[in-house]
Length: 90
Image 1 (cartoon, one colour):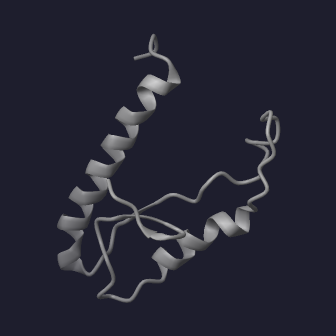
Image 2 (cartoon, rainbow, N blue to C red; image 1 turned 120 degrees about the vertical axis):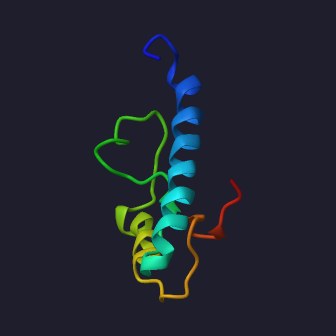
Image 3 (cartoon, helix red, strand yellow; image 1 turned 45 degrees about the vertical axis):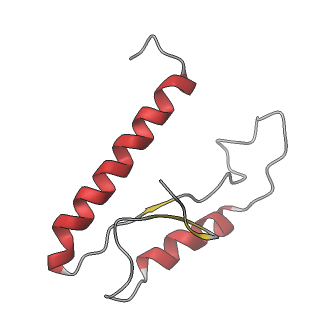
């Protein structure tokens, strides 16, 4: 896939990640392990500092959804994709 542009390969990798999230969630639920994917949003980091537009979201703000998912109760959701607003449709 090295000949394809990033815009062509990104959806494929995201689809694979979504599939793995659901598979792991199904397999690990019986062991009490919740598996979810998260979108932290674009954050102001060294990775984004040279973009031609400002990104003001802090890494701490982006991490909030990760912390929320990491501290779900045992009966919390599993096999989903989440951002700050909640569940994101696949």
